[in-house]
Image 1 (cartoon, rainbow, N blue to C red):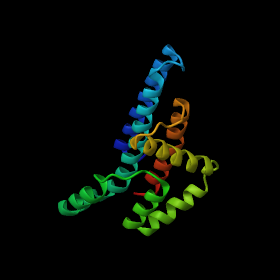
Image 2: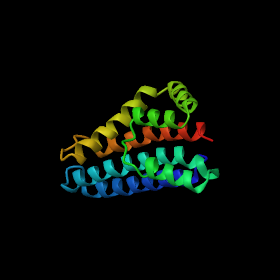
Image 3: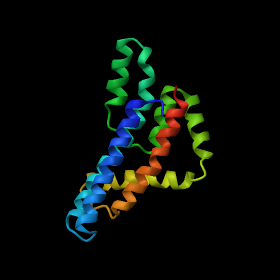
Image 4: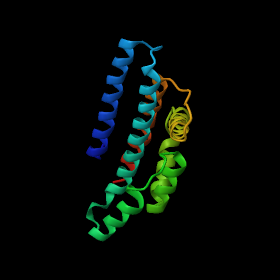
Length: 162
């Protein structure tokens, strides 16, 4: 990846998921701690993908004047936004329509495109359900899969925004 900060963030989340998996392996899948760890993982993974997609898009502005950087940070980077495919495409379009076109074209070429789309949506849905007081019906293993698949979206963004 070109964006070292985003790569580090994703690597850190992956390590944390591995550590959680070790705890689950020790206690067993049926232990009462597993749902709490799974909900934490949902929030952590979705937040990592959200911050990663915003950082990849916003970090291009390193050569802009301070005022423009501040505006992008306050209106985009520091805003709350689910990392859904629709929000990613809308964000790309606001900066550069060609970024959006390139993103969609490159994502369409992925052999596992439907799985990537589904995983990103499922991760967002689980976060929204938990954030609004619900109880996501998703396993820890599924959260890990969703996160791994969603990383491809970030890799594509990182490749097209230079």
